[in-house]
Length: 425
Ligand SMILES: CC(=O)N[C@H]1[C@@H](OP(=O)(O)OP(=O)(O)OC[C@H]2O[C@@H](n3ccc(=O)[nH]c3=O)[C@H](O)[C@@H]2O)O[C@H](CO)[C@@H](O)[C@@H]1O
Ligand SMILES: C=C(OP(=O)(O)O)C(=O)O
Image 1 (cartoon, rainbow, N blue to C red):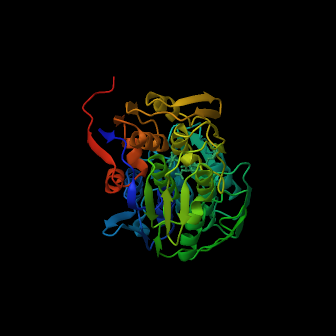
Image 2 (image 1 turned 90 degrees about the vertical axis):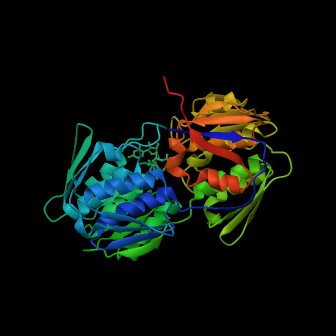
Image 3 (image 1 turned 30 degrees about the horizontal axis):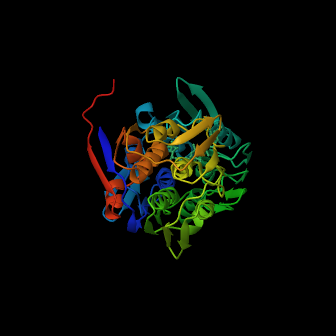
C-alpha cells in the first residue's frame, strides 16, 4: 500500500489539465454491453475504478483494450456471461449498472449488490423499481440480484423516482434504450454525466430525449451500433483543484474543462473572496486576499455537489469566521472532519451539519484517508498546512484522481508517493 507525503506551504500556480469524468466514464463503459459493435471512449481517465470496471466487463465477455491517447476500446461482440460476481462489483457503485444492460441484451442476469464509498446506506431500491417498471422479474438472494425479463424482453414503462438518484436514472436509461416501446422517467437526476450518457447512447442509435431535465423519454430501439465518444471533463476533479488553488492562495488555470458544470461552486468560491474567470474550455482560479466564510448545503445538480463538500470544508477551515456546511445527500459523509481536526481545524459536527470555525492555522499531521473525496480534502489541507502531512490508505484517492501527484507537482506542490511500510493493526 502507498502513502502520500505532502510538504505544505507552496502556492499552486500554472496550468492543470483535467481528465475525463470517472462517474461518466464508468456508465459509458457499461453501455458497451448494449451492442455487438465496438464502443470507443476518448478522454478516458486511467483510474483504479475504470480498470476495475474493465475487469468486470472482460469477465462478462467484452474485449477491453486500452489504447494510447486516453482511448479505451470496448467490444461487446462476444458477450458470454450475465454473471457479475461479488469480487468484481464490491469496490464501487457503478459496477451495479451492468445489471440493466445485461438484462436488456441477454434476458437474464445475476449481479452482486454493489460497494462504493462508505458514505451512507446507499440502497439500490430505486434501480430495481425502475427495472421492474420495465417488466423485469427480480429476486434478491445471498447478496445477489437475480433478474430476468418476461418472454419478449423488457418493455417500456413509466417510472416516477421518489427521490433524485444519479445511479438509478442512468441505470434506467441503460435498460430502456433496448426495451420495446416508450419509457418515461420522471424526477430524474440532471447531472452532466446523465446528459453525457444520453448523448453517447444516441450516438449509438438510441432515442433518448430530455436528459439534463427532470423528465427523460426513451423510445426503445431493436439494436444499437458502436460509436466513438469523448468522456465529459470531470467537474469534481475540476472543482477539487479549483479549491486547492484557493486554499493555497494560488493562481491556477484549469484546462479541458466545462466551466458551466460547476456554477454552484464558482458562486460559493466568489462569495469566499476567490477570483474565478470562466473561459472557453478553461477556468482560472486565484486568490490573494483573505477567505470569507460561506454556508453551503449539498443538493442534486445544479446544487452544490456532495462530491465537493469535503474539499469545500477544508477551504472553510481557513476562512475568517464560522461557516455551516449541511450534507443532504448522504448520511455519513463527514468522516474527513475528525481527520482535518488532526491538522488543527475546528469543526463541530451535529447530525448533517458541520460548523467550521476559522481561520485555523493548519499544521501537518499523519491522517487516514476514509473515502475518495474525503481523501482529497486531506490533500488540500496538507497543501495549505505548515510542515509535513502523511496520508495513509490512499487507495481511495487512486479510485478517482488520475496522476494526482504529477498534476499537483507541475503546479509547484511538494507531494510524493511512497510505500507505506507500517502495518495497520
Ligand atoms: C459512481 C457515481 O456516479 N457515483 C456518484 C453518484 O452516486 P449514486 O448514484 O450512488 O448516488 P445517488 O444519486 O443514487 O444517491 C442519492 C441518494 O439517493 C439514495 N438512493 C439511491 C439509489 C437508490 O436506489 N435508493 C436510494 O435511496 C442514496 O442513498 C443517496 O442518499 O451520485 C452521487 C450523488 O451525486 C455521487 O456522490 C457519487 O459520486
Ligand atoms: C462516492 C463516489 O464513488 P462511488 O459512488 O463509487 O462510491 C465518488 O465518486 O465520490
